Length: 481
Image 1 (cartoon, rainbow, N blue to C red):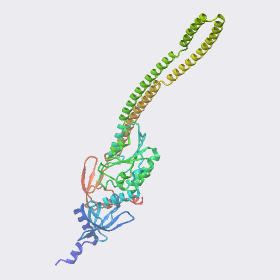
Image 2 (image 1 turned 60 degrees about the horizontal axis):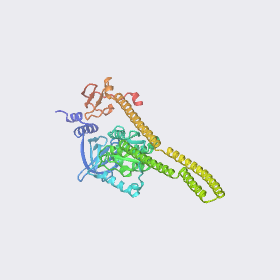
Image 3 (image 1 turned 180 degrees about the vertical axis):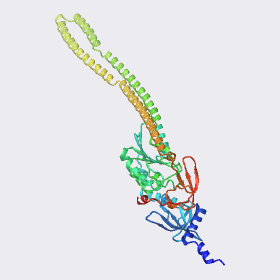
Image 4 (image 1 turned 90 degrees about the horizontal axis):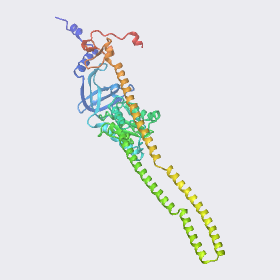
């Protein structure tokens, strides 16, 4: 009879071998599952990894979420939260325990994120951080506008297109920041403090495109709200869509429904300004015509008054009176009396003539002064100056538009060159390839592979499937480094 004990010893698993077999079977059969339950025994280790238990009324499951995945989770979960997890089922061989390795975590239903949002909003509102009296007025015609958003998002293109169309005279300064994930909020806080100092902008647009509450959570951080109020210049927010509201919107000096709306509220419309300038020019012409008509009427009245009071007429009247008196004296008085009166009349006539000449000189001087004042205040000089200013503004507008267009072209050319240099297909052309596991994760460490594991290899043209036969450890020089 065969030796049963010997056969059993030969075919038996080691404890580690059985644990590894179970691990491979579970990870292959449950590579991506969703599980809902209540969080308990939550522990965050200094390494950044999270270990916790997910339970319901009848069972519990050990879970781990490594640092690379939990960085995107905001806010940090607490015991008692109802969560929805996604991950792969595995076995931890040293303990032989079943566990779920999570790669995604969200609140079940409206859950913790909405509660955290409402609690922070109420607390900051009670502090007076959202008081409308603290909001600063926006500059009517800013010449330097700061933009804080992702350099790769559609929001930036919408803002730049809108500013170029409405107000090309303004200089735009971009401070690129991430707008999603754990690094987003600290980067936004640094940008709000640094951009006004670096570029001396007159206002700042803080924007990003739409997304879920989790995607927009960086704009619900308390540090971002306080940085908005501490910013040296007014801040306009354009976060998400029209129905999206964030803590940053309540703290901002002005909230716009979209990034495009933020750019519109930050800039005047050049077409409207041109129309206003045209109206002012027409009003100036009307005012000039009114002043000119009034000046002509005043000059005509002065001339008529001067004609009525002209000394020659007075002299003529006095000469006629003298002749009449002389004739009366000649008829009624002796020659001596007549001579005396004639002498007095001649003296009076001489004095009258002298006074009349003096009066005429004074009136002529006054008329000359009035003429000079009319010449110096003639409205034509103001019209010429306004036309020069209008021409100068038009030339500056055209020059600014051309410069912005050329700068945009150069930026696009540099971006295209950068994309060509970073194209991974160019690397594959030189004979390189990359390998990935069955789930599409790129393989970089041979120690993570198992013999017989299927992999895929991508070449410059096409690819192929393969199976791991031989695993080579890293070179000694690589380990030393």
